[in-house]
Image (cartoon, rainbow, N blue to C red; front, side, top):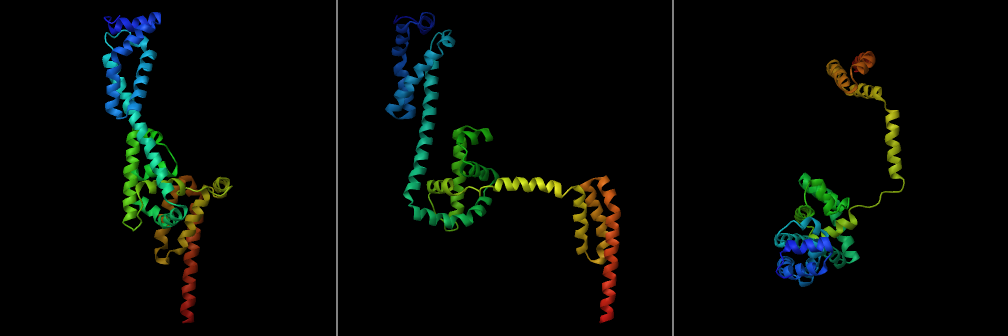
Amino acid sequence: MADDTDQILIRAYVRNRCESSFGELVHRHIDLVHSTALRIVRDTNLAEDVTQRVFLGLAQHSVKLQERFSLTGWLHETARNLAINTVRSEERRRRREQEAAAMNHLDSNDSETLWEQIAPRLDKALAQLSAIERDVILWRYFERRTAEQIGERLGLTAEAAQKRVARALDRLRGILAARGLTAPTAGLAALLSTQAVQSAPVGLAATAITAASAANTIFPATSTLQIVMTSTSAISPGRHTAYSGATVATASHVLGDRGVRNGRHTLIENASSHSWRTRKSEAALRTTL
């Protein structure tokens, strides 16, 4: 059996569920797989976990792999991919632990004091970020999206998305530091996660929805023309006629030709009436003087 090729052994396992054939494959390649994993994860326990998952994958995909003459290349690539994914998972876990530790390091008084200083300046600082920097900060800490979800929105891997969030957070920290508000990046992340978004009052969402629905009923399209016409009352008499024409043009853009035709007569009458009242007031003032 030791002289059999990988292909012979994997076929024996697929067709006869021959455990000894699979065992020979494991013994033949385990040093390669474990060494590959250890070079990447740099941790013995993690390397052992990766090695076990590689050979579990070999068993699960044995049917597809039985046409390969040698399994060495597949095992090496699988070990490499699983090891890289393990490193990324460990980095995310450590990052979460660092944020939690930073938050625990700040006692409740320090945290509240720092937030009271940052809160009034936070939105202005966010406005100084680029659009994509601001978006990833809002997604991560205000909407509490995961790196995977942010990556899906940006067409990036979770690792690349997390790096983008980290860079944006560091830039935000620098902007705040320029205003005398210093906090470690992990501490700022913890503050944003816990303080940036508070629950809105109960019933506010329903009130907003009701108000928006009512606006569509209270302010139909013709009311827009009335609002535009009312605004002309602030224009001086000499500019009134020209402004009325411009107002009609604006209303035409907003309401369409039919809406303007319906309101044009009223607009002109209001403009003329306003001009007459203005002239009458000026005459009365001259008489008084």
